[in-house]
Length: 566
Ligand SMILES: Cc1cc2nc3c(=O)[nH]c(=O)nc-3n(C[C@H](O)[C@H](O)[C@H](O)COP(=O)(O)OP(=O)(O)OC[C@H]3O[C@@H](n4cnc5c(N)ncnc54)[C@H](O)[C@@H]3O)c2cc1C
Image (tube, rainbow, N blue to C red; front, side, top):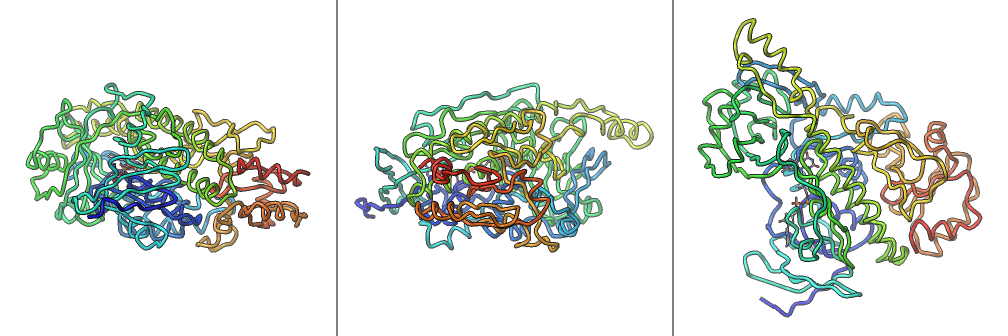
């Protein structure tokens, strides 16, 4: 052990959950080295979030591995249906049908040029994706991977952050000096608390199903498919019956024998053992079949919390450390991953000298309102789904049972269940409709922003108005990697030219003089000009529109200063 070790790194990422891992990958994409710390030596092997949303998937596409992520989890022909049963071995009540991965790929080929979901939401458990992301990160020479290292103190001054980390088994320790640090250390964030930054918002304790104490259970049930649900497979199986001990939802993880169950025990019970947990599972299934409990963890629902500040000096806060959600909608991790996309290019710009220090202030200005918006959306969806009073008859055979099941299919618990509801376009406004209107580095052009709050959570209006995500276009018929407008964007800024080839030499010269990465992209598609509403649009490295116009301003340098806060 060498306590005197002092290691220098441009960016220290504290926390190697999905948000920290994606930040490391994006920093590498933008040419920045970093060090990532994570208490546990390997990626967490317990199921959590089940949805990688459209924005997250398009970021994976930008990193070149969205297709590989789509190969994780369920087999290619497994449906993603959301199905409601009295118990899994008994009556089916209702089903939202969803295509398998193979069917979806076929559907993509039929999409119009202006399809806005090049990478629709994909349901795969976070634990598979985290392991995949860690494998990718471990292959990057730019990342010093310190899994199994816990950061236990830090200080900062005007020029650097100093952190101390110890190997979790006590075998090594070192201090690190970083230009910037990012706290991706989860909901209990030691970094955020040490900085004295509190969460704003509240925690819903009652009046909603998704409130209070839950358990997540990881289990192996080899007989479930062969004996009970193999002929009516779904990705999500809900139990709807009067027994409060079985009000659980089971997710297919690998499409064979591994499952996750979320269950709300009666009266916030936390003191349970493996036998009791297995009993909940068997009652939910409705059969006494072998259940191997691989792990179970308590967790709480009902939060809508956002950190008061996303920055303290040279330290930024991202992911659950910055916002805590109730799981309805599946927004927690996805919002955190988009925090990383917003922050990564700004850190790169400042460290590489083409962005001004104020650029980093725009992180909070842009992402904190999204934290509020998205936690609010989760809360709204959660409030639609109250605790159901399920009639006793629902489990009967015969006409009385049939009638009760028909009635149960109309319960808000079933129909308004927005916990990852099985439609691509569900909450599409939340997934890809976030906007940064009012940000100091966005150049507004006078047109009113599309109506976004709060009614449009379920809709997305593609718009060329600066401040929103760049509208998508397919550029050829194959609809594969390389066919999307996004695949043609540069790693830095991209100037889209929709009409002819106007003289853009002045902006190219100005960008080169500043060392600012700028690519030009001609898109001679009528649909492109229509969507963007101008002949030119300047796209940021995170695929958001910074500026648009029919011609470049006379002072192009002033434009570049504005969008990079130089
Ligand atoms: C049941 C359930 C279902 C969910 N469903 C969804 C969903 O469908 N979609 C969705 O988007 N989100 C979902 N979420 C939320 C999602 O799981 C979290 O938002 C996500 O894990 C947050 O990622 P993170 O990287 O910010 O933090 P975490 O995943 O909490 O990772 C933080 C990491 O930091 C490490 N760490 C902490 N302190 C230190 C330290 N001092 N030094 C070094 N390392 C440290 C921890 O070991 C941990 O690995 C769900 C959550 C639950 C519980």
